[in-house]
Length: 146
Image (spheres, one colour):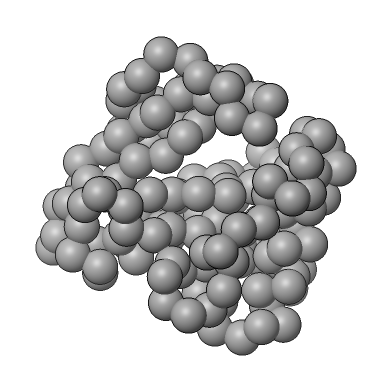
């Protein structure tokens, strides 16, 4: 259960495969809505993979938006959920955010995951809104640089 920063195109394509399986195939997000201009290794955002044993099974990314570290595209393959990997991804992205010098993070969480994020110290900061046909809420958290 170890997260690793993505630095090679091959690993980025593995992350894309995970996202496609979770968001497009499982949750019905349109393929053209899932991938965007930040899906590169050009430094606009940092991407990570989380492993279960030797297999990459989850991913996420972070970029700075309006002074916040914005956590995005967080997902885990269905058969690897409930192993605590979501927490591993969030912690890794928060650490990267701290390294970027950001003191607050935010995310658009699916409403069904609100309790998960609340347990990790996030607070709900919006009413429910729709994103890619799925109900979401804005969640924020203060972090400190150490």
